[in-house]
Image (tube, rainbow, N blue to C red; front, side, top):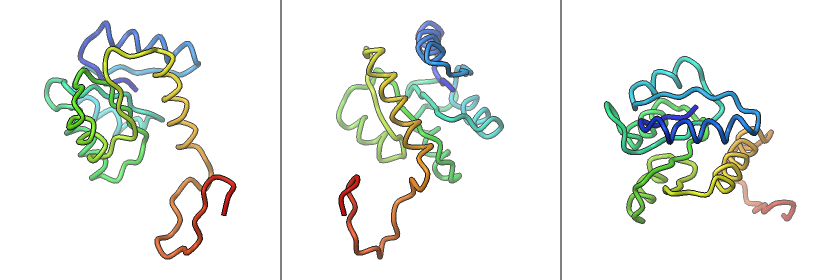
Length: 137
């Protein structure tokens, strides 16, 4: 799903995603994004920050408070380090700024979807004394 109030930008992202075989729904504001996630449970949310009715930061904050774990990639014109850190701290899985490379966007989408679909992708228990990095123990 793409949550973006700029129609041209939303259509661009839709085209990139559809070229890789993804079905895409577009919503134009934050409240519509929350409603759509609650009712359709998309595999991924590409989320603008500056949107009407609820901004992307509010959307990701609410989704995480509700326990929803779908991957969220923020795609925004807000470029400061503070913006990036806030988005990630609120629960976004990735953060890209506009203008962006379509190839990089799609690489990040593939990465987020791969991580979300990985069996056993949950973190180990906090009391697990073994540190695992990739195939290393």
